[in-house]
Image (cartoon, rainbow, N blue to C red):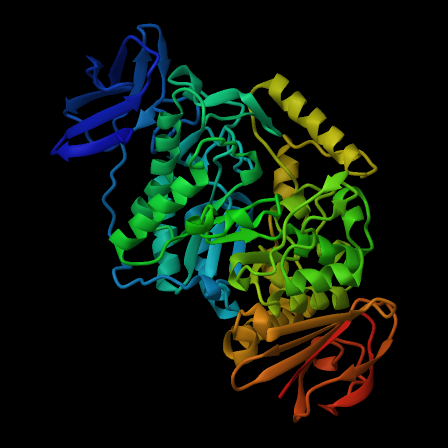
Length: 606
């Protein structure tokens, strides 16, 4: 298939290609001191192409469609004046310093999710770079960026992107992203990029003026779905698969996170996701290092990550929402909306053992049976968290866990996630107990669209069971309040929590029984009455046993362990972690009755 976009042919000579199968005429309009209008020729059915001279990086251009409409390039790599401005030719040359970069193995991922606009006061790629040293000290091995494709305005979560190839201008454009990726690799940190292949944003979306990118056959939460299986879908599929390869190859991205794949509809014989995974695998072989594709999915369907040879899509990993929901309900006691499907120790016990809690049984919130069994799928294919942008930002007040649970609860949440057999994801600031809210925010210019978004969010909050007046997602103050307070991590309990996270990550990365992500070497049980969960993990040389107490009072239980010299190595109740003081013994006997401090966990090794 042909690749759309702009590529250099020689000195000041560039080739412009666009897919527009339903148009009779397409012309390239060069916006320079000597404006040029160059008719384009069809090179293959639907693809138009022309070469132009006297072009240099920084040259602005648009396309003229059937002699009437003038639109930016759907495959624009940079929109310096935003979604309605002209596209700009980009200098793809860059002095990379990661020639020896071999990547990070998926099972070693400790993911740190960042929203570029709120992670620093400046809200740019370059402003993140000085913070990488601190993240490396924490133990982070993968930085996950929320979407950076060009959206309208300068404030947005990123899921309203309308130019999938263009790097957001307010973040620093393509060169800024390259500098950040290069700096991450110098710190030994892989980069995961969040991409959106389930819908297009509502403002500045001109792709449908070129081709049938959308279909009315399906409808997702965000409007019409992308056309991956209807008439002209070959061009749509090619456009987005080439987009995935573009991020990986041009920007040296290590992994992609596909947003909400339940909104990607394809009834064709070869699903778009399977084709995407196949093409990324080929690129991995060509580049000589493993590239990964992960996905957000609420389908609880192992087909997403099962190998293509057995009918799966072959993605490398997926988010496990069940884990978050099971943990969140035990910590907070919340039961609104989808949280009503969780709230028992047996739910978290099952998620720790298998992955999905719902594996085919009836889910009350969905009012239907949900999911299939994930017990046979490798642990390193599940990404788990206690917080992420959705689970915080889709709350009425954008409140993080520190507003919902005690300091002891924060430590218990950290231990549950980081000592799980799955890939942990932290949401920016979580490691020190960031208290600033994280709201949903936009900066659309269309007043009618702004009102519609505000009304939709109000309705969403009501449906989710939240009471109170909704904030204004378009207000600058909403965005400003969502900025993290980076300096807080050096003070008081914030500093203690940061050190605690660092210690947990070090244990996870160095202890043989914790480093080994293998469900077959894991035993999980629970005591529902006392709200206790017990885990036993083994490796060839070492083993660990840990106890999680979600009770707000001391909890007592009998414990039976294999005969061994069990030694306590971590207890959140200890004074050194600002705990209330521990009553647990330093060593364990094979059969013993233990009493745990409220909201705590303890780790023993043998």
